[in-house]
Length: 105
Image (cartoon, rainbow, N blue to C red; front, side):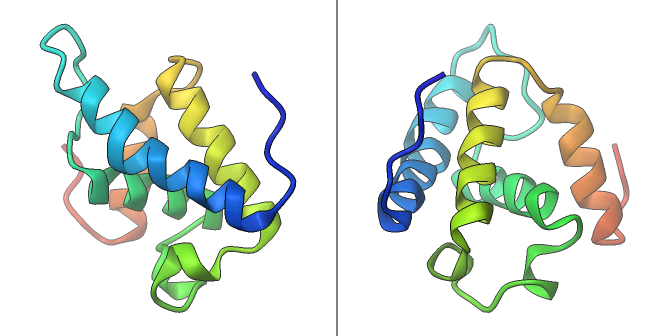
Protein backbone atom coordinates (compact mmCIF):
# COMPACT_ATOMS: atom_id res chain seq x y z
CA UNK A 1 0.00 0.00 0.00
CA UNK A 2 1.29 3.42 -0.90
CA UNK A 3 0.75 6.45 1.24
CA UNK A 4 -1.97 8.77 -0.07
CA UNK A 5 -1.03 11.98 -1.87
CA UNK A 6 -0.92 15.03 0.37
CA UNK A 7 -3.42 17.29 -1.42
CA UNK A 8 -7.12 16.46 -1.11
CA UNK A 9 -7.59 17.13 -4.83
CA UNK A 10 -4.91 14.53 -5.62
CA UNK A 11 -6.57 11.99 -3.34
CA UNK A 12 -9.93 12.58 -5.04
CA UNK A 13 -8.22 12.28 -8.42
CA UNK A 14 -6.87 8.86 -7.36
CA UNK A 15 -10.40 7.82 -6.28
CA UNK A 16 -11.74 8.84 -9.69
CA UNK A 17 -9.05 6.89 -11.56
CA UNK A 18 -9.74 3.82 -9.42
CA UNK A 19 -13.52 3.91 -9.87
CA UNK A 20 -13.70 5.12 -13.47
CA UNK A 21 -10.77 3.25 -15.01
CA UNK A 22 -9.03 0.63 -12.91
CA UNK A 23 -12.00 -1.12 -11.27
CA UNK A 24 -14.14 -1.30 -14.46
CA UNK A 25 -11.11 -2.64 -16.34
CA UNK A 26 -10.63 -5.37 -13.73
CA UNK A 27 -14.36 -6.17 -13.81
CA UNK A 28 -14.17 -6.80 -17.58
CA UNK A 29 -11.80 -9.73 -17.00
CA UNK A 30 -13.92 -12.88 -17.44
CA UNK A 31 -12.17 -14.56 -14.50
CA UNK A 32 -13.27 -11.77 -12.12
CA UNK A 33 -16.74 -12.38 -10.70
CA UNK A 34 -17.72 -8.99 -9.29
CA UNK A 35 -21.39 -8.03 -8.84
CA UNK A 36 -20.93 -4.76 -10.77
CA UNK A 37 -18.82 -3.54 -13.67
CA UNK A 38 -19.80 0.10 -14.29
CA UNK A 39 -17.94 3.08 -12.87
CA UNK A 40 -21.03 4.65 -11.29
CA UNK A 41 -21.76 1.38 -9.46
CA UNK A 42 -18.28 1.29 -7.97
CA UNK A 43 -18.69 4.92 -6.93
CA UNK A 44 -22.08 4.18 -5.31
CA UNK A 45 -20.74 1.20 -3.38
CA UNK A 46 -17.58 2.95 -2.20
CA UNK A 47 -19.21 6.24 -1.20
CA UNK A 48 -22.19 4.58 0.48
CA UNK A 49 -19.82 2.47 2.57
CA UNK A 50 -17.60 5.45 3.39
CA UNK A 51 -20.68 7.46 4.45
CA UNK A 52 -22.45 4.59 6.24
CA UNK A 53 -25.59 5.05 4.13
CA UNK A 54 -26.63 6.53 0.79
CA UNK A 55 -23.95 9.06 -0.03
CA UNK A 56 -26.54 11.60 -1.23
CA UNK A 57 -27.92 11.80 2.32
CA UNK A 58 -24.46 12.89 3.52
CA UNK A 59 -22.88 14.81 0.64
CA UNK A 60 -24.07 17.47 -1.78
CA UNK A 61 -23.83 16.65 -5.49
CA UNK A 62 -21.45 16.05 -7.13
CA UNK A 63 -20.18 13.83 -4.35
CA UNK A 64 -16.57 13.62 -5.47
CA UNK A 65 -16.22 17.41 -5.36
CA UNK A 66 -17.59 17.52 -1.83
CA UNK A 67 -15.57 14.77 -0.15
CA UNK A 68 -13.66 15.76 2.94
CA UNK A 69 -10.02 14.79 3.05
CA UNK A 70 -10.83 11.95 5.47
CA UNK A 71 -13.66 10.66 3.25
CA UNK A 72 -11.42 10.81 0.19
CA UNK A 73 -8.65 8.89 1.96
CA UNK A 74 -11.14 6.26 3.15
CA UNK A 75 -12.64 6.00 -0.36
CA UNK A 76 -9.22 5.41 -1.93
CA UNK A 77 -8.34 2.86 0.75
CA UNK A 78 -11.62 1.01 0.19
CA UNK A 79 -11.05 0.99 -3.57
CA UNK A 80 -7.55 -0.38 -3.07
CA UNK A 81 -8.90 -3.02 -0.67
CA UNK A 82 -11.49 -4.06 -3.27
CA UNK A 83 -8.87 -4.26 -6.02
CA UNK A 84 -6.60 -6.36 -3.75
CA UNK A 85 -9.51 -8.63 -2.69
CA UNK A 86 -9.06 -7.66 0.97
CA UNK A 87 -12.78 -6.89 1.27
CA UNK A 88 -15.86 -8.61 -0.13
CA UNK A 89 -17.35 -6.47 -2.91
CA UNK A 90 -20.54 -8.55 -2.78
CA UNK A 91 -20.98 -7.65 0.90
CA UNK A 92 -20.27 -3.96 0.27
CA UNK A 93 -22.80 -3.95 -2.59
CA UNK A 94 -25.44 -5.65 -0.41
CA UNK A 95 -24.96 -3.02 2.30
CA UNK A 96 -25.28 -0.22 -0.25
CA UNK A 97 -28.43 -1.66 -1.78
CA UNK A 98 -29.98 -2.33 1.65
CA UNK A 99 -29.36 1.27 2.74
CA UNK A 100 -31.11 2.38 -0.44
CA UNK A 101 -34.12 0.12 0.15
CA UNK A 102 -33.35 -1.93 -2.97
CA UNK A 103 -33.85 -5.66 -3.34
CA UNK A 104 -30.64 -7.42 -2.44
CA UNK A 105 -29.56 -10.21 -4.83
